[in-house]
Length: 100
Image (cartoon, rainbow, N blue to C red; front, side, top):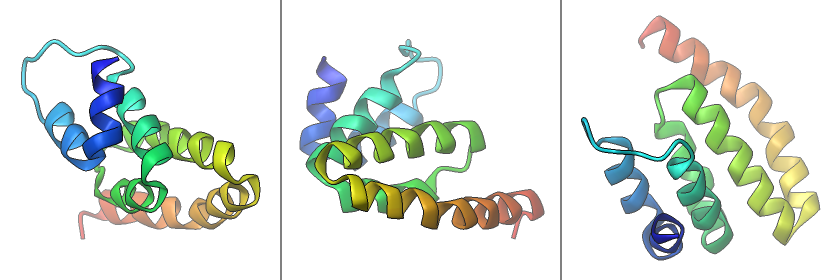
């Protein structure tokens, strides 16, 4: 609950803090809760945060949360975002793999 509320108010700050805590007790879906709330309150901010996530599994999971939140607001926009980002995710994965 706390993480969701923080995500509504300051999604970027909440995700930055949550994802960079070493040895902290984390819930298995904490980052998902934050991103879902972030994307519902600031869809464009949440979309622009995704490329900053280096871990592929986390990025894919949080991408799904953004699509879910945007679909609640506008299904057509969510569909376009999901389709556009298939190629973008592939390029980002390649960039991370090549470390460029």
